[in-house]
Image 1 (cartoon, rainbow, N blue to C red):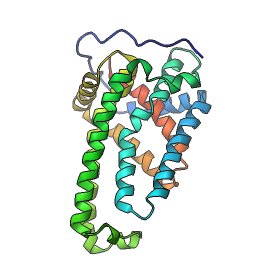
Image 2 (cartoon, rainbow, N blue to C red):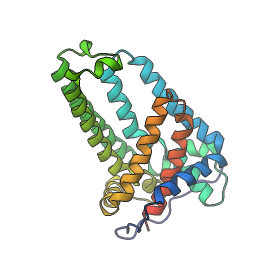
Image 3 (cartoon, rainbow, N blue to C red):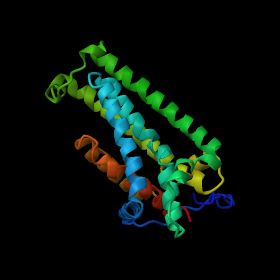
Image 4 (cartoon, rainbow, N blue to C red):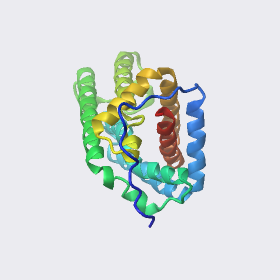
Length: 255
């Protein structure tokens, strides 16, 4: 196992957000793909775990669309925290070192407190989303057993207004989660900062570079939707590539 990699010196004052071009998100994605190719075993392990968790959720709540949708969205919201090992692998590659699988499993050790607090905040966001979703479902269907299972039923006119409200609420929560997550966890791993500083820095990045961050969010969303369209098989590769790419996004966003 490689020697423990300590965090870099703490941030000196408020970190500056770099000037970014509109092509940056594609560059991050390409860099993530290159990192995946350089340590495929680590990436496939994490990608397999992501897909397995998705399949378990699907099988457990196959006949409960309301709970299935809540849990899938919740999974997406907390996914950046579960990519800590991938960030560590990219950090090692950036330094010209070969990543160690065992080290990626314990990448959280030196920043456990900050990451745990941030994870709790993300879980609270998931619980709030679950509450909003359950309210929308129960207001429309009155009984969750009446929720249709087929796509043709969902496309009926009487459900379209509900679907529009549910999609809008889901998109709003995902955008909030993205804004809080985009550089937070890699920053806590790389520098000795607390969860609040990391979250505020992430929000500042989105506020100061909205078009680039929105493009990055859209790319992530499209890749996740594509993975869902393949019954999560593609997530085995898409998941780790996005994890590696998120490290490069963090490194590019902060000067």
